Image 1 (cartoon, protein in one colour):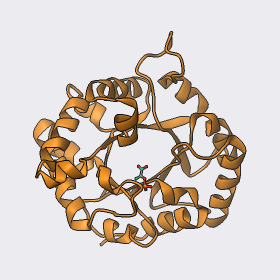
Image 2 (spheres, rainbow, N blue to C red):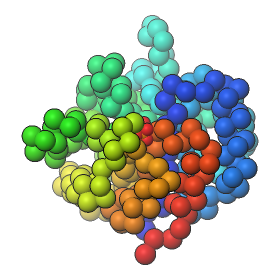
Image 3 (cartoon, rainbow, N blue to C red):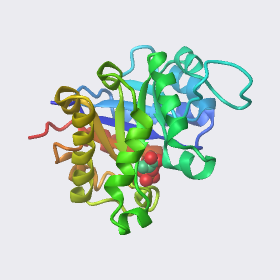
Length: 256
Ligand code: PEP
């Protein structure tokens, strides 16, 4: 049985001081999370303050929203895996559709980022998802398969053991229009099949596949009810401590 994972992607929101307040408010509402793993991904500038607000033995893990593939060097504005490890990150989001859309990230970059994360013991959360045009053209599965092959090619099963995949239909991100459970389940099953075909059935049944796109306290249960969906990548709703606490608490409920 895969343990649910709830990831909060703060995007470009919250200063370092605001991060400390948000985490305090969240911890007041959720004292522990024994049945679901939780990751917060604040902006780089708030990572240290978030780490301090979480404390040394927190039930929440820290994640970053992006990474550069080199360890150091002349890459102005970038942040590397050793830097993220040193500040306390254990996870990193890679290939978010906003990075693909606004910053020209392609699968070849994403593959290098996944490898850099793995090289330094960070667990990558790899985002894949189709645009509305792709979906309407019946291309959902082929687009996602191509993103997965481009980003994961050449990884060993051992590498894959620490990867999480987040299915995030682009048309559902920040729009208030989430996928239906049925739409998400179809894609999640095809992602699991991709992993089984490319690696093996053990890793396919162990890997966590999250849904992301307008997840709220009102709809989270409709996703978690399916054993194909192992949790959620949450954007907007994670900035409100009441909403995110409710999502985490609902993820604690044992699944049938
Ligand atoms: C996201 O940022 O990955 C996301 C899913 O955002 P939202 O929950 O706001 O749609």
